[in-house]
Length: 494
Image (cartoon, rainbow, N blue to C red; front, top):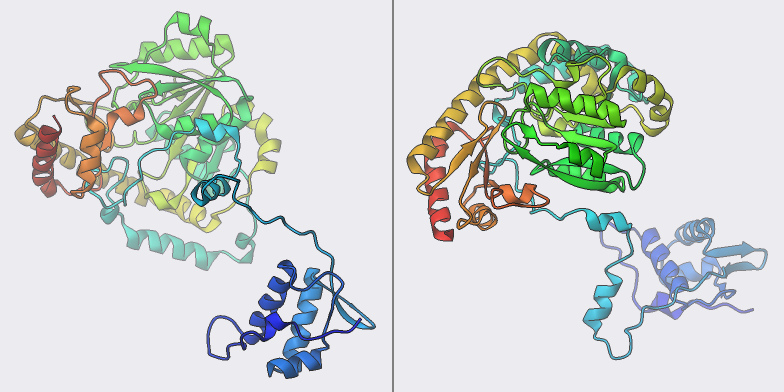
Protein backbone atom coordinates (compact mmCIF):
# COMPACT_ATOMS: atom_id res chain seq x y z
CA UNK A 1 0.00 0.00 0.00
CA UNK A 2 1.44 3.36 -1.02
CA UNK A 3 1.37 6.39 1.23
CA UNK A 4 1.17 10.08 0.63
CA UNK A 5 1.10 13.23 2.71
CA UNK A 6 -2.53 13.82 3.81
CA UNK A 7 -3.87 16.93 2.15
CA UNK A 8 -5.53 18.01 5.41
CA UNK A 9 -2.05 18.43 6.89
CA UNK A 10 -0.88 20.66 4.04
CA UNK A 11 -3.92 22.95 3.86
CA UNK A 12 -2.37 25.38 6.35
CA UNK A 13 1.24 25.60 7.50
CA UNK A 14 2.09 24.92 11.11
CA UNK A 15 2.43 28.11 13.11
CA UNK A 16 5.90 28.98 14.31
CA UNK A 17 4.83 31.93 16.44
CA UNK A 18 5.49 31.69 20.12
CA UNK A 19 2.32 30.53 21.79
CA UNK A 20 0.73 27.80 23.89
CA UNK A 21 0.89 25.12 21.13
CA UNK A 22 4.28 23.83 20.01
CA UNK A 23 4.92 22.42 16.53
CA UNK A 24 4.78 18.97 18.07
CA UNK A 25 1.37 19.66 19.67
CA UNK A 26 -0.03 21.19 16.47
CA UNK A 27 1.00 18.19 14.38
CA UNK A 28 -0.32 15.76 16.98
CA UNK A 29 -3.71 17.48 17.07
CA UNK A 30 -4.00 17.64 13.26
CA UNK A 31 -3.22 13.96 12.81
CA UNK A 32 -5.55 12.91 15.60
CA UNK A 33 -8.44 14.97 14.23
CA UNK A 34 -7.81 13.61 10.73
CA UNK A 35 -8.05 10.07 12.11
CA UNK A 36 -11.15 10.74 14.23
CA UNK A 37 -12.82 12.59 11.36
CA UNK A 38 -12.23 9.67 8.96
CA UNK A 39 -9.99 11.79 6.70
CA UNK A 40 -7.41 9.08 7.31
CA UNK A 41 -9.09 5.70 6.82
CA UNK A 42 -8.32 2.74 9.08
CA UNK A 43 -5.42 0.76 7.67
CA UNK A 44 -4.12 3.60 5.50
CA UNK A 45 -0.39 4.09 5.65
CA UNK A 46 1.19 7.37 6.70
CA UNK A 47 4.27 8.75 4.98
CA UNK A 48 7.64 8.15 6.53
CA UNK A 49 8.86 10.61 9.12
CA UNK A 50 11.47 12.08 6.74
CA UNK A 51 8.93 12.67 3.93
CA UNK A 52 6.38 14.32 6.22
CA UNK A 53 9.06 16.47 7.86
CA UNK A 54 10.21 17.76 4.46
CA UNK A 55 6.64 18.43 3.32
CA UNK A 56 5.85 20.44 6.47
CA UNK A 57 9.32 22.04 6.73
CA UNK A 58 9.81 20.82 10.30
CA UNK A 59 12.39 18.59 11.93
CA UNK A 60 12.23 14.84 11.54
CA UNK A 61 12.51 14.45 15.34
CA UNK A 62 9.24 16.35 15.74
CA UNK A 63 7.44 13.94 13.37
CA UNK A 64 9.00 10.89 15.01
CA UNK A 65 7.95 12.05 18.45
CA UNK A 66 4.37 12.67 17.29
CA UNK A 67 4.16 9.25 15.59
CA UNK A 68 5.41 7.59 18.77
CA UNK A 69 2.85 9.46 20.94
CA UNK A 70 -0.06 8.63 18.62
CA UNK A 71 1.02 4.99 18.61
CA UNK A 72 1.13 4.97 22.42
CA UNK A 73 -2.39 6.45 22.47
CA UNK A 74 -3.63 3.75 20.09
CA UNK A 75 -4.27 5.89 16.98
CA UNK A 76 -1.39 4.46 14.93
CA UNK A 77 0.07 0.99 14.47
CA UNK A 78 3.79 0.93 13.58
CA UNK A 79 5.19 -2.16 11.84
CA UNK A 80 8.12 -3.13 9.57
CA UNK A 81 6.49 -1.58 6.50
CA UNK A 82 5.81 1.78 8.19
CA UNK A 83 2.96 3.33 10.16
CA UNK A 84 -0.73 2.55 9.64
CA UNK A 85 -3.91 4.09 11.02
CA UNK A 86 -5.57 1.90 13.67
CA UNK A 87 -9.17 0.73 13.31
CA UNK A 88 -11.32 2.77 15.71
CA UNK A 89 -15.01 2.73 16.57
CA UNK A 90 -16.65 5.57 14.69
CA UNK A 91 -19.01 7.85 16.64
CA UNK A 92 -22.23 8.59 14.79
CA UNK A 93 -22.65 12.30 14.11
CA UNK A 94 -25.47 14.05 15.97
CA UNK A 95 -28.19 14.77 13.44
CA UNK A 96 -31.07 17.20 13.79
CA UNK A 97 -34.36 15.23 13.95
CA UNK A 98 -36.64 15.58 10.93
CA UNK A 99 -38.90 18.59 11.36
CA UNK A 100 -37.11 19.83 14.51
CA UNK A 101 -35.19 23.05 14.77
CA UNK A 102 -31.48 23.21 15.51
CA UNK A 103 -32.37 24.87 18.81
CA UNK A 104 -34.33 21.82 19.97
CA UNK A 105 -31.52 19.48 18.93
CA UNK A 106 -29.03 21.60 20.86
CA UNK A 107 -31.21 21.52 23.96
CA UNK A 108 -31.48 17.73 23.77
CA UNK A 109 -27.75 17.28 23.39
CA UNK A 110 -27.14 19.68 26.31
CA UNK A 111 -29.22 17.62 28.78
CA UNK A 112 -27.36 14.37 29.45
CA UNK A 113 -29.03 11.80 31.73
CA UNK A 114 -28.30 12.10 35.44
CA UNK A 115 -29.42 10.31 38.60
CA UNK A 116 -33.15 10.62 39.30
CA UNK A 117 -32.46 11.74 42.87
CA UNK A 118 -31.12 15.06 41.57
CA UNK A 119 -34.64 16.09 40.52
CA UNK A 120 -35.59 16.23 44.20
CA UNK A 121 -32.86 18.77 45.01
CA UNK A 122 -34.28 22.26 44.83
CA UNK A 123 -32.38 24.88 42.89
CA UNK A 124 -31.78 27.78 45.24
CA UNK A 125 -31.05 31.40 44.34
CA UNK A 126 -27.49 32.17 43.28
CA UNK A 127 -25.35 32.84 46.33
CA UNK A 128 -23.78 36.31 46.34
CA UNK A 129 -20.24 37.01 47.43
CA UNK A 130 -19.56 36.82 51.15
CA UNK A 131 -18.89 40.55 51.45
CA UNK A 132 -22.44 41.53 50.42
CA UNK A 133 -24.25 43.19 53.32
CA UNK A 134 -26.79 41.32 55.47
CA UNK A 135 -25.96 37.88 54.06
CA UNK A 136 -26.81 35.32 56.77
CA UNK A 137 -24.31 32.72 57.88
CA UNK A 138 -21.12 34.71 57.24
CA UNK A 139 -18.88 35.63 60.21
CA UNK A 140 -16.91 38.84 60.58
CA UNK A 141 -14.16 37.93 58.12
CA UNK A 142 -12.21 41.16 58.55
CA UNK A 143 -11.98 40.56 62.31
CA UNK A 144 -10.34 37.15 62.10
CA UNK A 145 -6.81 37.14 63.64
CA UNK A 146 -4.96 36.24 60.46
CA UNK A 147 -1.52 36.94 61.92
CA UNK A 148 -2.12 34.51 64.79
CA UNK A 149 -3.48 31.88 62.40
CA UNK A 150 -0.47 32.34 60.12
CA UNK A 151 1.85 31.71 63.07
CA UNK A 152 -0.07 28.52 63.91
CA UNK A 153 0.37 27.31 60.33
CA UNK A 154 4.05 28.27 60.32
CA UNK A 155 4.68 26.29 63.52
CA UNK A 156 3.16 23.21 61.91
CA UNK A 157 5.11 23.63 58.68
CA UNK A 158 8.38 24.03 60.59
CA UNK A 159 7.72 21.25 63.07
CA UNK A 160 6.51 18.47 60.79
CA UNK A 161 8.29 16.42 58.20
CA UNK A 162 7.37 14.81 54.89
CA UNK A 163 5.16 12.20 56.58
CA UNK A 164 2.42 14.81 57.05
CA UNK A 165 2.19 15.10 53.26
CA UNK A 166 0.72 11.59 53.12
CA UNK A 167 -2.76 10.34 53.99
CA UNK A 168 -3.77 10.81 57.61
CA UNK A 169 -6.14 9.07 59.99
CA UNK A 170 -9.56 8.81 58.28
CA UNK A 171 -11.17 10.04 61.51
CA UNK A 172 -8.95 13.14 61.43
CA UNK A 173 -5.73 14.20 63.10
CA UNK A 174 -5.66 12.84 66.69
CA UNK A 175 -4.42 16.18 68.05
CA UNK A 176 -7.43 18.01 66.60
CA UNK A 177 -9.90 15.36 67.73
CA UNK A 178 -8.60 15.61 71.30
CA UNK A 179 -8.81 19.42 71.17
CA UNK A 180 -12.39 19.28 69.82
CA UNK A 181 -13.47 16.77 72.48
CA UNK A 182 -12.07 18.93 75.30
CA UNK A 183 -13.64 22.11 73.89
CA UNK A 184 -17.07 20.50 73.43
CA UNK A 185 -17.02 19.04 76.93
CA UNK A 186 -16.39 22.44 78.52
CA UNK A 187 -18.27 24.78 76.17
CA UNK A 188 -21.21 22.67 74.99
CA UNK A 189 -21.67 19.92 77.59
CA UNK A 190 -21.07 17.19 75.00
CA UNK A 191 -20.20 13.76 76.37
CA UNK A 192 -17.46 12.37 74.18
CA UNK A 193 -13.86 11.28 73.83
CA UNK A 194 -11.53 11.85 70.92
CA UNK A 195 -12.32 8.32 69.68
CA UNK A 196 -15.90 9.43 68.94
CA UNK A 197 -14.92 12.49 66.88
CA UNK A 198 -14.72 12.39 63.09
CA UNK A 199 -13.21 15.45 61.39
CA UNK A 200 -15.12 16.28 58.21
CA UNK A 201 -14.95 18.77 55.37
CA UNK A 202 -17.51 21.09 56.89
CA UNK A 203 -20.95 20.31 58.30
CA UNK A 204 -22.29 19.24 54.90
CA UNK A 205 -19.96 16.23 54.74
CA UNK A 206 -20.96 15.32 58.29
CA UNK A 207 -24.65 15.37 57.33
CA UNK A 208 -23.95 13.34 54.19
CA UNK A 209 -22.07 10.75 56.27
CA UNK A 210 -24.99 10.43 58.68
CA UNK A 211 -27.40 9.79 55.82
CA UNK A 212 -25.11 7.33 54.03
CA UNK A 213 -24.04 5.38 57.11
CA UNK A 214 -27.29 5.13 59.06
CA UNK A 215 -30.12 5.01 56.51
CA UNK A 216 -31.07 3.02 53.45
CA UNK A 217 -32.66 4.37 50.25
CA UNK A 218 -36.35 4.91 50.84
CA UNK A 219 -36.03 5.38 54.62
CA UNK A 220 -37.83 8.33 56.19
CA UNK A 221 -36.02 11.43 57.43
CA UNK A 222 -37.68 14.22 59.41
CA UNK A 223 -36.30 17.71 58.82
CA UNK A 224 -37.28 21.04 60.32
CA UNK A 225 -39.60 23.21 58.24
CA UNK A 226 -38.57 25.95 57.66
CA UNK A 227 -35.04 24.69 58.07
CA UNK A 228 -31.50 24.41 56.78
CA UNK A 229 -31.53 23.71 53.05
CA UNK A 230 -28.25 21.80 53.18
CA UNK A 231 -29.82 19.14 55.39
CA UNK A 232 -32.57 18.53 52.84
CA UNK A 233 -29.98 18.26 50.08
CA UNK A 234 -27.98 15.67 52.04
CA UNK A 235 -31.11 13.58 52.66
CA UNK A 236 -32.25 13.80 49.04
CA UNK A 237 -28.79 12.79 47.83
CA UNK A 238 -29.07 9.64 49.98
CA UNK A 239 -32.45 8.75 48.40
CA UNK A 240 -34.36 9.28 51.65
CA UNK A 241 -38.04 10.18 51.90
CA UNK A 242 -38.18 13.59 53.56
CA UNK A 243 -41.04 14.55 55.86
CA UNK A 244 -41.08 18.28 56.70
CA UNK A 245 -41.79 18.89 60.40
CA UNK A 246 -43.03 22.29 61.48
CA UNK A 247 -41.23 24.37 64.08
CA UNK A 248 -42.76 26.76 66.59
CA UNK A 249 -41.52 28.89 69.50
CA UNK A 250 -40.08 25.76 71.16
CA UNK A 251 -38.39 24.36 68.08
CA UNK A 252 -39.17 21.09 66.32
CA UNK A 253 -42.80 20.14 66.96
CA UNK A 254 -43.53 16.39 66.93
CA UNK A 255 -46.90 14.79 67.79
CA UNK A 256 -47.57 11.19 68.80
CA UNK A 257 -49.45 10.75 65.52
CA UNK A 258 -46.28 11.57 63.60
CA UNK A 259 -44.44 8.63 65.16
CA UNK A 260 -47.31 6.34 64.25
CA UNK A 261 -47.81 7.59 60.69
CA UNK A 262 -44.25 8.09 59.40
CA UNK A 263 -41.67 6.79 61.89
CA UNK A 264 -38.26 8.17 60.89
CA UNK A 265 -34.86 6.64 60.58
CA UNK A 266 -33.17 10.06 60.87
CA UNK A 267 -34.30 13.28 62.55
CA UNK A 268 -32.51 16.51 61.71
CA UNK A 269 -32.77 19.29 64.31
CA UNK A 270 -31.06 22.50 65.43
CA UNK A 271 -32.23 22.52 69.05
CA UNK A 272 -29.95 25.20 70.54
CA UNK A 273 -30.69 27.80 67.84
CA UNK A 274 -33.23 26.73 65.23
CA UNK A 275 -32.28 27.83 61.75
CA UNK A 276 -33.66 30.21 60.62
CA UNK A 277 -36.29 31.06 63.27
CA UNK A 278 -33.88 31.25 66.23
CA UNK A 279 -36.13 29.18 68.51
CA UNK A 280 -34.62 27.14 71.35
CA UNK A 281 -36.00 23.63 71.83
CA UNK A 282 -37.35 23.28 75.36
CA UNK A 283 -35.89 20.70 77.74
CA UNK A 284 -39.19 18.82 77.78
CA UNK A 285 -39.19 18.48 74.00
CA UNK A 286 -35.55 17.42 73.94
CA UNK A 287 -36.07 14.64 76.46
CA UNK A 288 -39.28 13.51 74.76
CA UNK A 289 -37.58 13.44 71.36
CA UNK A 290 -34.68 11.37 72.73
CA UNK A 291 -37.03 8.92 74.44
CA UNK A 292 -39.15 8.42 71.33
CA UNK A 293 -36.07 8.06 69.13
CA UNK A 294 -34.78 5.31 71.42
CA UNK A 295 -38.19 3.62 71.35
CA UNK A 296 -38.49 3.69 67.55
CA UNK A 297 -34.86 3.00 66.65
CA UNK A 298 -34.28 6.46 65.16
CA UNK A 299 -31.15 8.60 65.12
CA UNK A 300 -31.19 12.33 65.91
CA UNK A 301 -28.75 14.56 64.03
CA UNK A 302 -28.09 17.60 66.23
CA UNK A 303 -26.65 20.44 64.15
CA UNK A 304 -25.05 22.90 66.59
CA UNK A 305 -23.84 25.32 63.94
CA UNK A 306 -23.37 28.61 65.84
CA UNK A 307 -24.23 28.10 69.51
CA UNK A 308 -20.84 29.42 70.69
CA UNK A 309 -22.28 32.89 70.12
CA UNK A 310 -24.86 33.16 72.87
CA UNK A 311 -25.80 36.81 73.50
CA UNK A 312 -28.12 36.62 76.52
CA UNK A 313 -27.92 34.43 79.61
CA UNK A 314 -25.92 31.26 80.02
CA UNK A 315 -25.06 29.05 77.02
CA UNK A 316 -27.68 26.48 76.05
CA UNK A 317 -26.14 23.03 76.46
CA UNK A 318 -26.17 20.50 73.66
CA UNK A 319 -28.96 17.93 73.51
CA UNK A 320 -26.32 15.24 73.06
CA UNK A 321 -25.19 15.65 76.67
CA UNK A 322 -28.63 15.37 78.29
CA UNK A 323 -28.77 11.58 78.46
CA UNK A 324 -26.00 8.99 78.55
CA UNK A 325 -25.83 6.88 75.37
CA UNK A 326 -28.43 9.07 73.69
CA UNK A 327 -29.11 8.23 70.01
CA UNK A 328 -27.73 11.63 69.00
CA UNK A 329 -25.09 12.39 66.39
CA UNK A 330 -23.63 15.81 67.12
CA UNK A 331 -22.56 17.92 64.12
CA UNK A 332 -20.45 21.08 64.35
CA UNK A 333 -18.46 23.34 62.07
CA UNK A 334 -15.65 25.88 62.21
CA UNK A 335 -17.20 27.91 59.38
CA UNK A 336 -18.73 30.38 61.85
CA UNK A 337 -16.17 30.28 64.65
CA UNK A 338 -13.16 30.48 62.30
CA UNK A 339 -13.91 31.17 58.61
CA UNK A 340 -15.91 29.32 55.91
CA UNK A 341 -13.09 28.49 53.48
CA UNK A 342 -11.28 26.50 56.19
CA UNK A 343 -13.75 23.69 55.32
CA UNK A 344 -13.39 21.84 58.60
CA UNK A 345 -16.25 20.46 60.65
CA UNK A 346 -16.80 17.45 62.87
CA UNK A 347 -19.20 14.66 63.72
CA UNK A 348 -19.44 13.18 67.22
CA UNK A 349 -20.72 9.60 67.12
CA UNK A 350 -22.23 7.67 70.02
CA UNK A 351 -19.53 5.48 71.56
CA UNK A 352 -20.87 2.13 70.35
CA UNK A 353 -21.57 3.53 66.89
CA UNK A 354 -18.05 4.93 66.58
CA UNK A 355 -16.60 1.46 67.17
CA UNK A 356 -19.03 -0.09 64.67
CA UNK A 357 -18.25 2.48 61.96
CA UNK A 358 -14.50 2.51 62.32
CA UNK A 359 -13.87 -0.01 59.53
CA UNK A 360 -16.36 1.46 57.01
CA UNK A 361 -15.07 4.98 57.61
CA UNK A 362 -11.50 3.84 56.98
CA UNK A 363 -12.64 2.84 53.48
CA UNK A 364 -14.86 5.89 52.84
CA UNK A 365 -12.54 8.64 54.07
CA UNK A 366 -8.96 9.67 53.45
CA UNK A 367 -7.35 11.95 56.00
CA UNK A 368 -6.57 15.31 54.40
CA UNK A 369 -6.05 19.00 55.23
CA UNK A 370 -3.48 17.71 57.71
CA UNK A 371 -1.50 20.92 58.11
CA UNK A 372 -4.70 22.92 58.66
CA UNK A 373 -5.99 20.34 61.14
CA UNK A 374 -2.76 20.42 63.15
CA UNK A 375 -2.68 24.22 63.04
CA UNK A 376 -6.27 24.36 64.30
CA UNK A 377 -5.43 21.94 67.12
CA UNK A 378 -2.62 24.26 68.19
CA UNK A 379 -4.86 27.30 67.78
CA UNK A 380 -7.40 25.75 70.15
CA UNK A 381 -4.93 24.42 72.72
CA UNK A 382 -2.97 27.69 72.89
CA UNK A 383 -6.09 29.62 73.94
CA UNK A 384 -6.18 31.67 70.74
CA UNK A 385 -9.48 30.06 69.72
CA UNK A 386 -11.13 30.90 73.04
CA UNK A 387 -9.89 34.50 72.92
CA UNK A 388 -11.20 34.84 69.36
CA UNK A 389 -14.61 33.50 70.39
CA UNK A 390 -14.77 35.97 73.26
CA UNK A 391 -14.01 38.92 70.98
CA UNK A 392 -16.57 37.75 68.42
CA UNK A 393 -19.30 37.30 71.04
CA UNK A 394 -18.87 40.91 72.10
CA UNK A 395 -18.76 42.13 68.49
CA UNK A 396 -21.84 40.18 67.39
CA UNK A 397 -23.75 41.30 70.48
CA UNK A 398 -23.02 44.92 69.54
CA UNK A 399 -23.91 44.39 65.89
CA UNK A 400 -27.16 42.67 66.72
CA UNK A 401 -28.15 45.50 69.06
CA UNK A 402 -27.35 48.03 66.33
CA UNK A 403 -29.43 46.08 63.80
CA UNK A 404 -32.37 45.89 66.20
CA UNK A 405 -32.16 49.62 66.76
CA UNK A 406 -32.06 50.31 63.03
CA UNK A 407 -35.07 48.04 62.43
CA UNK A 408 -37.01 49.73 65.20
CA UNK A 409 -36.33 53.20 63.83
CA UNK A 410 -36.37 52.73 60.07
CA UNK A 411 -38.32 49.63 58.98
CA UNK A 412 -41.61 51.32 58.14
CA UNK A 413 -43.69 48.20 57.52
CA UNK A 414 -45.41 45.89 60.04
CA UNK A 415 -42.94 43.29 61.25
CA UNK A 416 -41.95 40.99 64.10
CA UNK A 417 -38.42 39.87 65.04
CA UNK A 418 -37.69 36.24 65.88
CA UNK A 419 -34.74 34.82 67.79
CA UNK A 420 -31.88 37.09 68.61
CA UNK A 421 -30.39 35.42 71.67
CA UNK A 422 -27.75 33.57 69.68
CA UNK A 423 -25.88 33.35 66.40
CA UNK A 424 -25.28 35.69 63.47
CA UNK A 425 -28.75 36.52 62.12
CA UNK A 426 -32.18 37.89 62.92
CA UNK A 427 -35.40 36.76 61.27
CA UNK A 428 -37.88 39.52 60.49
CA UNK A 429 -41.39 38.26 59.73
CA UNK A 430 -43.54 40.32 57.37
CA UNK A 431 -47.23 40.25 56.44
CA UNK A 432 -47.99 38.30 53.29
CA UNK A 433 -48.68 41.43 51.26
CA UNK A 434 -44.91 42.11 51.35
CA UNK A 435 -43.55 39.16 49.28
CA UNK A 436 -40.19 38.21 50.73
CA UNK A 437 -38.76 36.57 47.59
CA UNK A 438 -39.33 39.74 45.56
CA UNK A 439 -37.83 41.97 48.24
CA UNK A 440 -34.75 39.73 48.59
CA UNK A 441 -34.23 39.64 44.82
CA UNK A 442 -34.49 43.42 44.53
CA UNK A 443 -32.17 43.92 47.51
CA UNK A 444 -29.36 42.21 45.60
CA UNK A 445 -29.37 45.10 43.14
CA UNK A 446 -28.66 47.42 46.07
CA UNK A 447 -25.70 45.50 47.55
CA UNK A 448 -27.70 43.54 50.13
CA UNK A 449 -28.27 39.79 50.43
CA UNK A 450 -31.01 39.07 52.96
CA UNK A 451 -32.53 35.62 52.50
CA UNK A 452 -36.25 35.12 51.94
CA UNK A 453 -37.72 33.17 54.86
CA UNK A 454 -40.05 31.30 52.49
CA UNK A 455 -37.03 29.85 50.66
CA UNK A 456 -36.21 27.75 53.74
CA UNK A 457 -39.64 26.05 53.80
CA UNK A 458 -40.65 22.87 52.01
CA UNK A 459 -44.34 23.41 52.68
CA UNK A 460 -44.51 27.16 53.14
CA UNK A 461 -47.34 28.54 55.24
CA UNK A 462 -48.63 32.09 55.53
CA UNK A 463 -46.25 32.60 58.47
CA UNK A 464 -43.20 31.77 56.37
CA UNK A 465 -42.82 35.24 54.90
CA UNK A 466 -40.00 37.47 55.98
CA UNK A 467 -36.31 38.24 55.71
CA UNK A 468 -33.35 36.52 57.34
CA UNK A 469 -30.81 39.27 58.01
CA UNK A 470 -27.19 38.37 58.69
CA UNK A 471 -25.26 40.82 60.83
CA UNK A 472 -22.04 38.83 61.34
CA UNK A 473 -20.08 40.32 58.43
CA UNK A 474 -21.73 43.75 58.24
CA UNK A 475 -20.32 46.65 60.32
CA UNK A 476 -22.80 48.25 62.72
CA UNK A 477 -22.47 51.72 61.19
CA UNK A 478 -23.97 50.43 57.94
CA UNK A 479 -27.25 49.19 59.38
CA UNK A 480 -29.20 52.47 59.36
CA UNK A 481 -28.82 53.21 55.61
CA UNK A 482 -29.27 49.52 54.78
CA UNK A 483 -32.50 49.21 56.74
CA UNK A 484 -33.82 52.46 55.27
CA UNK A 485 -33.28 51.03 51.80
CA UNK A 486 -34.88 47.73 52.79
CA UNK A 487 -37.88 49.61 54.10
CA UNK A 488 -38.26 51.40 50.78
CA UNK A 489 -38.04 48.11 48.88
CA UNK A 490 -40.58 46.44 51.17
CA UNK A 491 -43.05 49.30 50.86
CA UNK A 492 -42.66 49.32 47.08
CA UNK A 493 -43.25 45.55 46.94
CA UNK A 494 -46.32 45.85 49.15
